[in-house]
Length: 135
Image (cartoon, helix red, strand yellow):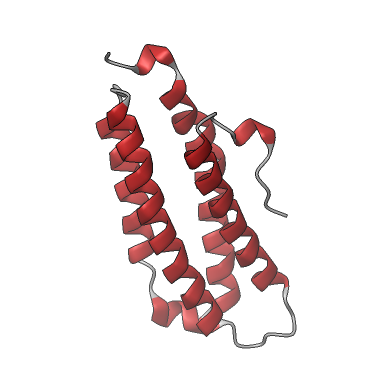
């Protein structure tokens, strides 16, 4: 269901590869949601969230280092969105999630879907725009 389509590539190989990894994690969440053979999905959801956070932290560090290296003008506002993403992931209520596992997966997917579509297309695409460089 989730795949990295051409319009999501920004033209920076490392960032594009990491974005693909985020799509892969979203696809894993979707497949877990649709898997009717796993009745109690709590441990799988927790593992997915832990991997998502670790992956996102590394991706954001790499993306921010790239932005600084090219003199990206909108660095601080972009970094603020990264912080907001991590805060959202860290604020997940695991007790509530255990009681409402399918709802939690849907929430995670909606969050990831919004992030992948809007952040990459509206924010990350501007990184490679020469008008957004200070040098």
